[in-house]
Length: 333
Image (cartoon, rainbow, N blue to C red; front, side, top):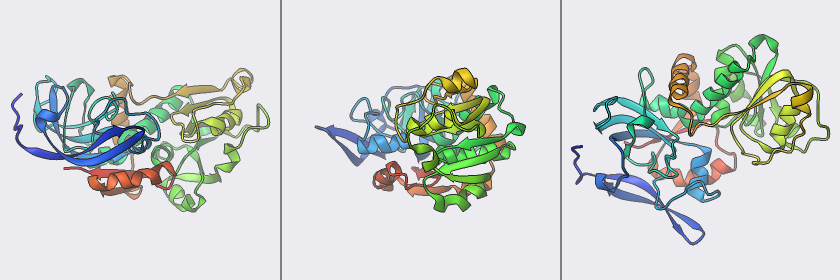
């Protein structure tokens, strides 16, 4: 693969010193990148909960050091040995260990396996990262509810962590599909924002975040998308209507699940796990196609702000503390 190895570019680099994670803005050359058959000029990345964990070292999501963080990116192919891609193609990548075991999106250039890339057609690289891993995960959750026949006519659908990245996109997607959305948030001051995305009702997360006192509660929603886990997910399950489905994709409150089997064996509730990292390519392509078809671009702009690469480390603590609304696009190129 022909390359201008002398040309330098900026990247964020994580290193480990004892128990502390260090972050530095460094200058790299193409020869410093990891193996792959496609080189991409990265124009945009995004910030996700997992990125904040990696940048702060709050959880061991990075499995080798040094590491360029950033679990997703979008840009254009610079050079390719892969038969499906050529120079100039717009592409998006998330998952497959990006930013964890393989150099990630917080760099102006990346070398990756072409088998990991999804081509972009009608979605621009900026829009792809305004959606990012969070939006793609939200779409996978919506698709899980559809597969389990959660219909718009059967009642409300709950979204937990609704003011965050996954939650914001999930509210917008569900509303666009005609679902009646209940948004749960710990930031009730964001009620107008959530209603602008399509929520018909906003509730305080404290209704769901405390330990359950009973194995079953009042039946409230026919489906749910949960980004929180722990007691919240347990309460969501206990209050899901007969035959409903809950798509679980996050652990903002915790990785535990203190629930009984009662929702499953007495109300036939389905708990559908949603993984974005190793999802098969056919499912990825379907999700990105659906995002292009469904997302309201005006709503997407309203939930998104843009930052520079150098600004990213300072945002990580706010992200973990739940003080970040919607989506953050990182301008790279």
